[in-house]
View 1 (cartoon, one colour):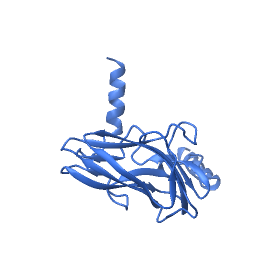
View 2: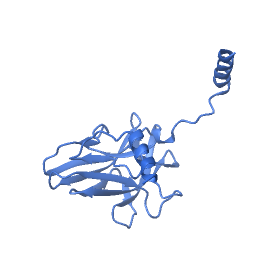
View 3: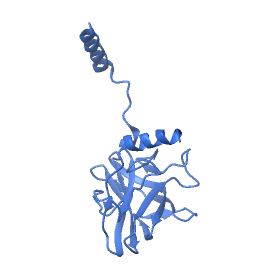
Length: 194
């Protein structure tokens, strides 16, 4: 009987479609990388010096990006300088670290789901860890002060590439391994009983 129920349930899902939505963080990501192909989000050991970095949109629908907004912050001993959006653009942000960028038509093309929207330089002062974060701007176009992308005429929420706004999108001079979700969750549970 249990097998019959399972078969019927699977058949209903196959015929009607799944009622479970895909994780929205999987698409429309925004991150900072050490390469334009959006592969290098971490470097465990960097000598002091200047390093190029790129603000890249990933897993974006094909077409053209005509704008974006985000706030970039840096924690640690490094500095970020020389932010330059690509294309014929205007950056209308007024607060430090924020970027509200409009790009003239046709915009920047999305190639293989990726679009490099800005170039910057990260300066590493010493061997101490440095991390960069992405969040929404103060005068956000979307509710909830979240990063946004204007793509194919539609304003959509952009998700920080490695999780949430409290997670770094670029990690320098620090281990690249992510903390296991179970460990973080168990630590939170244990702290409730202290």
